[in-house]
Length: 119
Image (cartoon, helix red, strand yellow):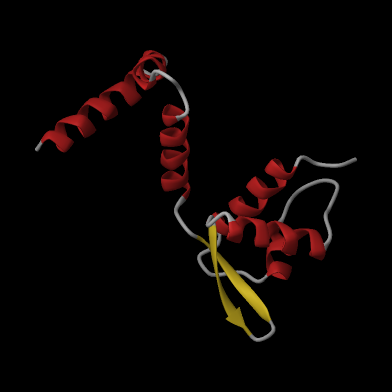
């Protein structure tokens, strides 16, 4: 069974976000909790793709590279949201739908952040 690459990229990214240190591909493989398991070469391919997309950075460590996320999970989510709003013909309408579906707590947080931005 072939897994969509997006889900595998997300799983690898989650491993990197959860680590306080840069990881080699083998270390990522050891920490991946997916079924069915994947091979070392698959993890290496995914890490290279994430690197080419500027989602991770890498540094040489002997013959291998150590990988770290290029941004935090929260920064990545914010960038994804910005891309989604930019992809529509009417970002204001999309933003309106987004805001309409926020919880009360998220609405309060958004109001607080907007007040802070005005300052």
